[in-house]
Image (tube, rainbow, N blue to C red):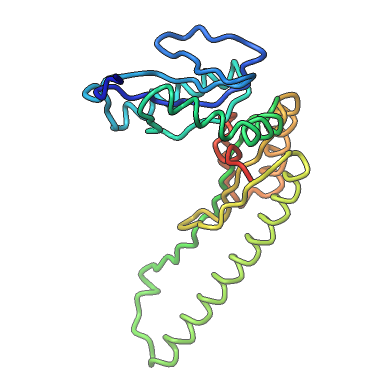
Length: 228
């Protein structure tokens, strides 16, 4: 009878034909030439705090150095090994195809920030407006200037994204941006061209000094692991 006090935590689906695992307490649940890297733990020992999430992410990064993998999200728990094996059997063709797509590649993330214009008012600016019309006219000019800067920044990030797309196998452009962030995207890059990709980002930063580039990675391919 299964021990209901235990759960099996999944870290990643990996191409298991190339290399064996030696990372206790992690172990593989193998199906054909793929495997789920898992850990079995007592429910009472499981935590879902920031420290646990960081430890989980660090483990996935170590696995990423050893295997071509599909990383699982933090908190992916199944009842037992049998349930893990069932998933591998059902999704084998999907996992096999995706692992081939990701072989030899890693993910980079890029955020681009534009310094928000701050209207400074010195002592001479703190005057009484002659009338409401003058006040509204100034506000209109301020708005036009702000919109102009937004349009210039948007044209720049479109060019930047197109340049980096050429150097990546896949890419994701995130729709939701806020605050100073004018662009957020992720790129799947071949390991052998990582240095060139990073140098291209550095060159683009020099071309657009009014923007601030925040490049992170390489990471396990979280944004490219989902099947079609």
